[in-house]
Image (tube, rainbow, N blue to C red):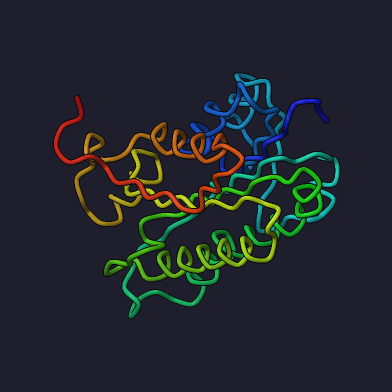
Length: 227
C-alpha cells in the first residue's frame, strides 16, 4: 500500500480518533476506520488518508485483506450507555461488549500477521473506567476492564509487538456531550481533556525509543483553569 509505515485508526471520523489521525499524519500513511459518511470522507480528504468504512461489529477478513502492511493499530472506536445494573437490560451489555471488546479483539486477530511482520504496535484507547467504575457506569466500565485484559494478554502472547493502553479521564468530545446528557449534568468543556492531549499520549507511545516499551499511560484533566 505504501513505502511509509501504515497506521490503521478506528473511530477516526471525529473526537479522539480524528485527533490521533492528525497527530500521526506526518509519520504514517493512514487508514481511517469509521461507519462511513461525510465526516469520514472529510478527514480522509484533509489528511490524504484511505477510508475504511465498515461497521466493526460486522468486520470480516475481506474488509482488511487489501491492507497489506500494517505497522500501527489504534483502537479508538467505542460506545457507552449509562444506567444502573438494576435497570440495564442484557441487550445493552451485549451491544457494549460487541463494540468495545469483541470487535476490537477480532480486528486485532485479523491484523496480527501484518503486525508480526512489521514488529508493530497496538494502542488501545481505554478509559478511566477501565481502572475504576462509578455508579451507573457498570456496563461500560466492565467492557473497559475487559479491554485492559485483552491488551495485557496480547502483550504477553505477542512479545514482538508493542502494546499500549491509554486511560484518559473525561475528554471534550461529542460522546462526552451525550454522556453528560445521560447524566443530566452541565457540559463544561474547560474541565475535560482536549482530544489532542490524548493524541499526544499516543504519539509519545509510538515514538518511544526502541529500548522503551510504553505499556500504560493514564491521563487526567489538570486541576483548575488551564493557562
